[in-house]
Each structure stands twice: as structure tokens, then as C-alpha cells.
Picture 1 (tube, rainbow, N blue to C red):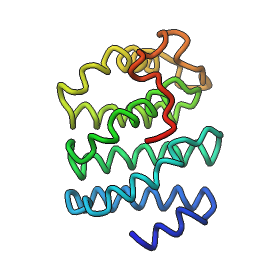
Picture 2: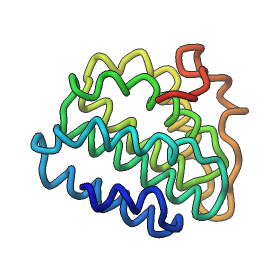
Picture 3: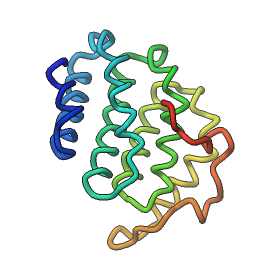
Length: 165
């Protein structure tokens, strides 16, 4: 893990995306044994989750979100709980983006959180389900529209800016 750390600081975005994906794979493969690396690793994901550009930035943000979902599965609900709320807000911001890639990553993240937290995910259903239904109703080719406009604003609980994850 320490070798990956340096690359997350200095490598080009494409390499960072590969490294983040590799870390996610390592977390998946190691399961609960990833716990000693979890705290430091998830903190390293924060800058990537806050990227707003297109192209390589968008790709890195999506891969980082996928990795965070994998971390949650690996370390369990209790260890992940301090990050749950902020990452839910971040994922919701992806749902309302014009990027189908980020929307897909957000819905996958929501699926992991629903499985991990069970009834604890219920308060988010009123926001997530309409967004999901609208997303699947879109034409698959060539339709990249912001979703937030047609199903309303997210509830205040998810609306807060995610400066600090």
C-alpha cells in the first residue's frame, strides 16, 4: 500500500485511476484484513471524490467512488460509518450530474450502502429511487442531461456540500 501512496501524489491522472482501481481490488481481495489500511486510504480518496472536471477527472472520480464502496464492503458498516453521510452526499452529487459514468458509479455505491446498512439506508430512498427511475428511463445513446431538474432537489440531508469527507 505504501508504494501506491506515492503514485497517488505524483502520477498523471490516468495512472492515479489505475492505482485507485488496484487499491480497490486489493481491498476486495483482502476483505476485513484491509482494515489497517482503511483510514489512511479513504482519506487519500477525498481529493479524487471532489474532482469536477470531465474526461480523466471524471473517470478518476468514478473509480474512487467505486473503490470507496469496495472499502465499505471490506471493512464493514461500523468502520465505514464515519464516512457514510459525506460519501452519500458526494454520490448524490454524481447522480445529478450530466455524466452517465458518474451516475452509474453513484447507483452502484448506493447499492453497496443499501446492502451494508439495510434499514439504515431507508431515509435515502426518497432521493435515490426517483433519480434511479429517471436514469433508467433515459435513452441510452446520446442523452446526457442533468437529472436533478426533473425530480426536484435532494433533501436537505443530502444537499450539503462535501468539502470534508
